[in-house]
Length: 493
Image 1: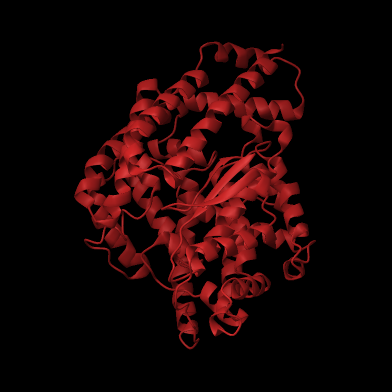
Image 2: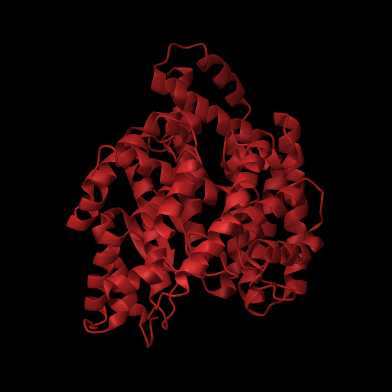
């Protein structure tokens, strides 16, 4: 075997353990009883340590050095680049830190589920203090190894090539036009009348409706399933994708669009190239590109007028309510494009959502870089929410700084991916409509032309290219936020 072949064999073995870890994580979120938390945390920590040991075996350095001297195809060179990147990411972090982070993260996340409901900042803060301390330690180690600031080193885990400098430039620009746009749209929508859902919408019926919508979006049910969790997510592996949503029996709207969003993640996973299965090069390019798929499904497809027409028909059928004006196309479109300043990011509309992301970015950037302490977060959250959206979260922790799951396990550097994804999604559509009759495809109920474009340009490309190269090959330019602004102004004004 060549050195390259030995590396591919090793990383395919690693993928099997990552598969097991993904399923344990999904089960903990979707099925596990509360009494199983401690044992599961210990089991997942043990598995994390084993994966880390496999990822940092001493012989890998020699194999990489030798493989770089071998005659490789362009695709093999890309594969080697991605294997080496994952190896470098793993080797800088000591094993005891990996184990400590796994235990602290599992403990914090599990306790957060009840602490959030109880608005218990004091209880949460005791666990989160350890998560933050360990994350800062990781960030410093990574930063020293990569020659980056601590927060840039954490960004590199999720968005390779993205820096604080580039994000500051991007988000400062958004903050110059977004507040005025929000106010103009709110003023415009004042005169619009909306009929909101009223009554009981059973979880079982909502799930059945969601499954119908997933069929329309061509989800492969032989390689995935839909479940329920506290926080919607997409997990599992490409051959067994697990998506979840959460249901409110007083309102079917959020869960349904949550399913559309998570299906976007799932279709990306299901569309990754089988030729590179189990290898880093066959994985999603970055979190921002992953979010670009879920947000393309939710924002570009899901909230478009022709898709709302399908939702109108399917939901009226599901709830046997063909004469209920709630389910009329025009009313549903108004519901799904209604702008409102609210506390909760995951429930936020398309227009105010970036404000939520930018404030989280600013807080986690300063937290990881040591500019602020974790105890400063509640007050800063309140201050930034008032500045961005004019609402206060003072003493309202469950709807403020405790609302998200990401920080409970130290996923610092992740939040920018959401708005980067929205920007990429708008850019894809701006390019796609030059060759695809976008609205006609949706209206027909056969979205194949849209999915073919995504498959050709994003899904099957996996991590063969850097993020900038991937986007430029697909759209002719690297990230251009002007497409995002144009999309928002076109839809809402």
